[in-house]
Figure 1 (tube, rainbow, N blue to C red):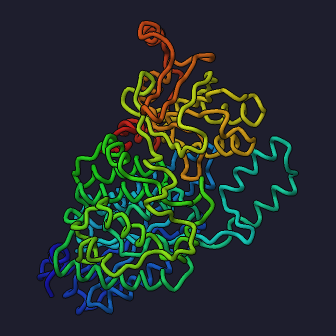
Figure 2: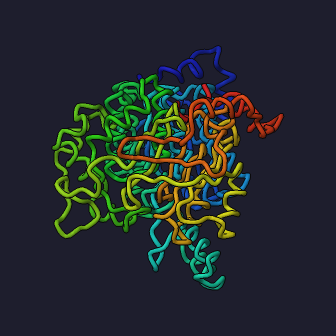
Figure 3: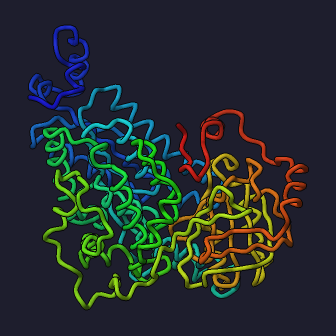
Length: 553
């Protein structure tokens, strides 16, 4: 059988008898040695609801590959949970895990001669981590999303719980009410249910062409997801036959499609970080300014959480993201000629897709968008000379000017918020949380949720060189570069400085002179001491700026 570009070196000929003997011990037969090997990278683990069901999906994929004439080989990579580690030191490992996952997939597949790869992910970092690994290997590949969790019976979710903590701190609810919400809000497998980072990246990857149509919106527990896994096993064999690789699919135009869909759906700021890193892995020249360029012509159409009202499960019931993509394609906002893992183009995949029903209220028409241009704003100025990423929906306005209150860690900033030390008109700054400074670039969902829970969402702004959860909303600016650890302007801000955020002009500035900034810089001493050993130490030494995607190579 053909399509054995890599496995033949592992198992063909008398000299490889020892290798075959090991594989026979793992259950391989003589017939299997004639088939293409397809590695199945599973992020299945019981550490988080997002991934607890994925090994079961991987089993379906393995059977499907076998039925289609290949030899599927299941292996595991890691996952961590943002939701569990949020607000703790453990969160420093979250973004690091993206690199560990990519490295581990590359390592196993590269070592063991798999001809194709299917990766299955179900949480924020393992999804781009999988794609980065597939891009580096550049062998026929498909990504499968583990699927979204359904909302609770009271329409609550994980982010609801985070915001209720702020309400509790304010005194608006009792501890008993808080625990009640905690108890009901996350039940069963699946990634967080709003247009948070997991669903954002799933949608981006589908738009990119690296997962089957419809994959990104499916419920984790559904027949659709089981069918998606079976179909992916069949599809990877077609990719092997045609030798269609990620480099054929993940082009600059495909990344522009992904950005367009992320904006239309009101997706997470993390998409900027991850898409930059994914593009780098496949040698596509993608920059922050591409998000601004595409954002000027792309409206926000989706009324999805966190700043909207609906969950991904509800959008899935209306047809998922394919009708959105068809709308964008018909308007000339997508590149229809991009190849996908179906072996067909985006235009061909969408040819028979019908629009949403008139009764649905989740996706607005292009004539009545939620916002005329992108909610993801790339801000420059004397506080972010290399760029920053803002999530500004317009609900809290498009500009803010206020007085800085500065904290050198997430813990200190969160304590100040919960202790009611933040007042209307404040600009909260949490710094030294960038890729190097953390190290690890923690998400700031707990501080931003506490702000929303205390009713300050439209009264204060929040700045950080860290990142935000996809569940964050409010007047927030992250990914500020250069980061504070590198002596960027954010490190020089003092309590009482006036900060201006202007999303109409894409400006982030501090109201002091260049001379005063230079004087502060000359007197600045880095207060951060890094770990000397271990994964965080290695990450801090290798990671590059958030403006480049926090890449490590």
